[in-house]
Amino acid sequence: MSNKKLIYCLMAGLLVAGMGCKKFVEHDNPNINPNKPPYVTLATLVPAVQYSTCNNYGLLGYITTMFPQQMAAYASGPVNEDQNRDVRITSAFQGIYQNGITNSKLIVDMGKSQGSPHYTAIGRILFVTNLILATDTWGDVPLTEAIQGPNTFQPAYDKQEDIFAFMHLYLDSAINESKAVNPVSVKPGADDMIFGGDTSAWRKTAYLLKAKLYMHTTKKGAVAAANNALAALANAYTATSKDYQLIFSERNPNPWFVNVSGRISGSATFTIGPSKRFCDALNGVGYPGLVDPRIGKLIFKRATATQYTGITNGLANTGNTADLTDVTFFGQRTSPLLMGSYAEQKLIEAEAQFLANGGTPTSVGSTQAAYDAYIAGISASMDKLGVAATDKAAYLTNAQVAVGAANLRLELILREKQVALFLNPDAWVDVRRYDYNPALFKGMALPEKQDAGMNGQFIRRALLPLDELNRNPKANAALKPMTEKMWWDQ
Image (cartoon, rainbow, N blue to C red; front, side, top):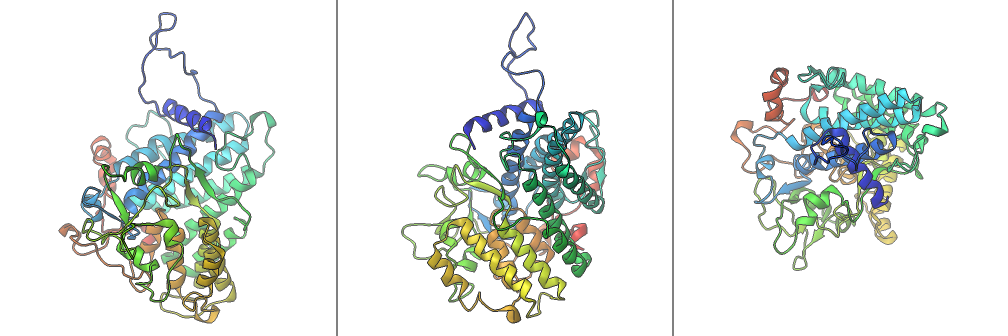
């Protein structure tokens, strides 16, 4: 992706979001800026929304990755959130609604008006991508009234169950639109920074999102959810598919570089870093005799250290030797930000096959299909990160990994899925679906110094931002405590 594209996307995002700018005088009119057109086009809007959607992933992940205990806060970082104190994540809420959902809907509407079903399909998929982030974080959120137009200043909050039904229908429409004949004159191409206008790739992404949504609802019926997910996955990515990601540039860096790794230097601030629980799951401590070679790709070990120790959640850096720096896979300026991958898909498939066969958190053994998907997911994850072939082979043949179908356990699938979902907000969904079970997520425990108001319970959702509660009286009726489970979690 070129720097020029990202510059265009940023300019379009500012234009569409309606943010303030300098006024320039042209023909005695101070309200006309000669450096910007008076309208936005699909070709400039799409990259803007793609950029903001990925940025929303980064803004949300910056906080939510502490809850499945992939990351933890330094003393100078978001310690309050790590200790579950007044978690609101305001910047992500604003980004999702101001730049993500609102502008995705504009792509849908413009695509319809200009007779471009392929643009409309992209808009719908980006819309759902943002909406999943919102509802998985805050539960009931504005939807129906929020997309009616700019004059709806106090939209009602839709129930999460209805939001899920809406998202499936929206994705179904996107799938159908991606198959429709599209005029060459209004067709996505280089402006699509994710798939380059490849509508089949967008269609596969829609199926992957549907599968993820189905798997969110396993507590509503594990076998049915798993079978629905498997049906969707049959039309999703293949081993040669491109991942759902945006690759950043030197001039416009990855949000993890901006918020975390780029700040680490002799004088800069350390904000969050890999948690002790996550490090121990990979460094041979949690699973003696099993060291995951991906740890060196995902996490930087300080030169004086002999082990990746990580930060204990809630303690704000006690003896940590591991960081997310600008030499790690996701911490570089030009790193990709993953919203969906083939590795994740195969591990979703492994879990779905395991559950469809009647598997439970305590059962042992499953089908060959479940086991094959589990191995394929690990292999794809290692290939994505560039693990050496010899290290990959050693891991895949380790007795704790190569257990065979008869000895496959849900714990093994979820361990691998947490690695594939490193820094992804979806990692928190899986932990909540299985009630923070330490038998499935080794080392999982309440954060140290957890806020007393949590009453010794794990966090299940974020509170709504204060400015939203002050601005919209309908938000107060939707406000729920951080310990209350989501609809899909009950």
